[in-house]
Length: 267
Image 1: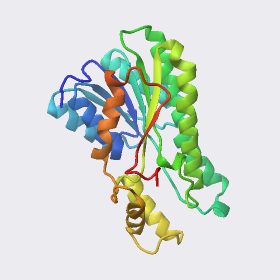
Image 2: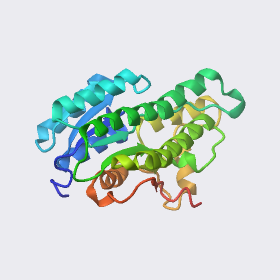
Image 3: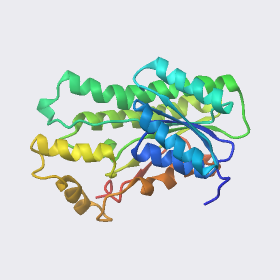
């Protein structure tokens, strides 16, 4: 690993207290980046930031952040700039899921998922972009990185709203790439499949609760069986692609969503 690959990059990551967000934050910092960890769970985000700072390469701060609130997105951007002097990259990772069968979806379920996964991403993209435009041109492109899902390509009857939210993420990536290119900002993303994180562990329990699965762990086993690689992933399987998108190696890419799904989308 090159400890200077992301040197000088100041990155805001949403949903960074655990799972893929925390793993990516640590991986970015190991390559020299400074990271602001935004999350509704400030205590857990601070724990990750302390771990990063103890290692002594990139620096980290943590801020409490509800991505569904514009003022929290703006405050997180301001905190990043105050701590590190500027912002070069935004990673919009915050997300949640709560399964329902199609005819059981109600307004509360719809609003919960869409507000965090899609509205929260849009607000974050807007507020980070405002700061990037205010900073003016830099030598390399600014970057927005959206965390999508295989669910934008694979219709799933038990998580219709989640699928819808991730279709929205894909649209934000495509439309953002077109709209923001004139500001020297690229917009890309990556789309995991099943990643063993706290989100998926809770989803596994919820699927048993609604009667879609019979036992804990069955969701992981059933999906692994249909994957080309025959195994689910972990955050460490995702971090390399995230770092690629944050690095100069991807400067000429925009409007792309890279699937890291063990071969699910091709099955």
